[in-house]
Every structure is written in structure tokens, then in C-alpha cells.
Amino acid sequence: MCARVCALEFISFITSQAMDKCLLEKRKTLNGEDLLHAMLSLGFEHNSEILKIYLAKYRETKEQETLHRHLGSRRFYHASGHDMTLADIEFVRPEFDDFYDS
Image (cartoon, rainbow, N blue to C red):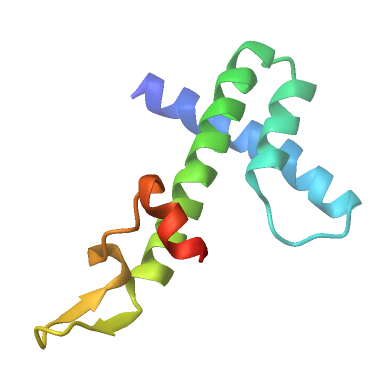
């Protein structure tokens, strides 16, 4: 029970500091950078560096998922009569580049 109360206090403390930054910048939405900035300004540098790396990797993964979802949703017609997505199409290998340049 004590750990839960401490965790809630910590989250509230960091969030409050991050919200102050948002209000100063006249924004209504809290983002990951706001939380990282709050942690740095409150003296939690050792945690914020790890979280900065995690946030960057998380965003990169989300970006790739969005791109894959966007490209994968396009449908193509194959000569065999089967529907295919872009993900199903095998891309041309580099050794065949000369063939397509002509």
C-alpha cells in the first residue's frame, strides 16, 4: 500500500511540474518532452536520460507501424487473381537495377 501511495505522489509531482510548463507555453496537451523536462528540473536526471531514449524508440516504432499500416493497406491485383498488399510484393533486388534503368 505504501509503495502505491508513493508512486501516486511521484506521478502527481512530476505531472504538476509538467503542467506548469504547458500553461506557461499556453498549451493544453501534455507530452513526453514536458514530463522529461519536469524530471530534469526536479533533479531526476538519472531517470530522465533512460526515459528520453525510451521515448525516442517508442516514437520510432509508432512511426514505422503507421507507415507499415499506410503502405500495407494499399491493395494490388496479381495476375493469378489474388489480392495483394504492398507488404506481399517482393521488391526488386539491387543486382537487377541495371535492367530497370534502361
